[in-house]
Image (cartoon, rainbow, N blue to C red; front, side, top):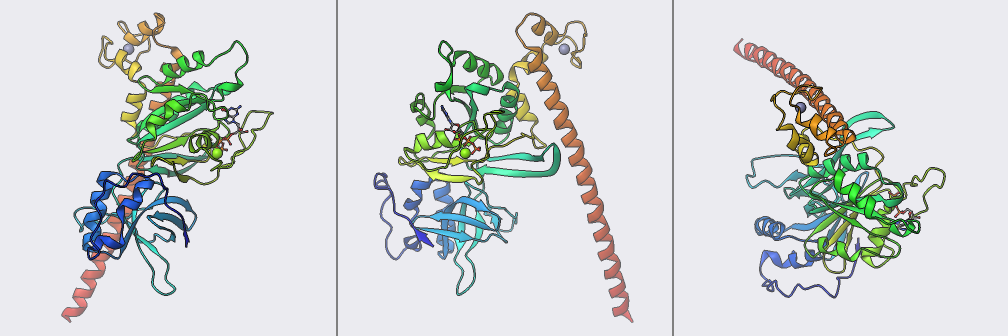
Length: 399
Ligand SMILES: Nc1nc2c(ncn2[C@@H]2O[C@H](COP(=O)(O)OP(=O)(O)OP(=O)(O)O)[C@@H](O)[C@H]2O)c(=O)[nH]1
Ligand SMILES: [Mg+2]
Ligand SMILES: [Zn+2]
């Protein structure tokens, strides 16, 4: 257990002092303001602690293999989470939870040699996850990246901007419940006569309705405009490929070397996967940043149809205008998509991305249905077996 000091410059004067005999006295919630405590989380914590004052509220700051690091008002716990479940209002509702970075949790301290345990996880207001893909081979499962985030900084470098990757990243964020913001980094590396205007315009085209900023994590240029997303009580997570400058930007916003950074490979401009665990960091003003390791491939999880529609709102807008409601956009008369492409209002590449990602999601759905079917078959087998055993036992009892 290592204690860390409270920030001096926090405005916690608004919360009234807790009487010493209140169950809340041991669980000073105002101390969690430095970790981005929201009013909703505050209220849910209060309700739970009033019933069970042994539970200690905190926020998950890092997860590594078996341990989950929870930061509370005064102490940093390394906890296990074998039996963690979501704290539903209806206590009869049991939903197991795998705590992730950003989660608001309640820890029960272990007595004697027993480990501290995360018992409850507050319902998440947003959850960023992706389908895990390793070297082109599907892992089949989902990787949860972070929870309870307001904004996601989708980071790309001006020196190797990749619009089709951006589309995927934006779709991933829209699926999480958080708001994407594009940050084009390394603008200081642009050659003389070149500026970020073109890339910003291109990013806006790939991400309609999303704010786009250009910045340098090294010089700090453009980073001040990002501060409106990092106010007290808000959480921002940074995602992007390795080497685009996420940690450098984090350090710039933190005003200190909070994260390690490393040179990219010159041969192919790829990063070296310097950041290896997701890490929650406190900004001096009460906002929270979560730095993440670079992701190589962005796989969309099943159920992302709405996210896709939001990402390609421009494409979908034309689609409503096709003459036939079941238009396949393959040369039918009165196809608004074909017209828009011909008229230069919509790019062919963007339409192709939309179709490709749509097909991918459809495949995910089919796979999910198949998995559900297998699950169900397995379940039915168990039910049948139990019934047979029960019938046998009843028979035995009779004689
Ligand atoms: N000139 C310049 N270099 C930058 C900028 N941002 C990052 N870099 C450099 O790019 C390299 C990679 O930066 P990191 O911040 O480690 O990248 P990352 O996105 O955190 O990478 P991973 O942790 O591997 O995912 C380092 O050498 C940084 O100094 C920038 O705005 N300008
Ligand atoms: Mg990094
Ligand atoms: Zn059409």
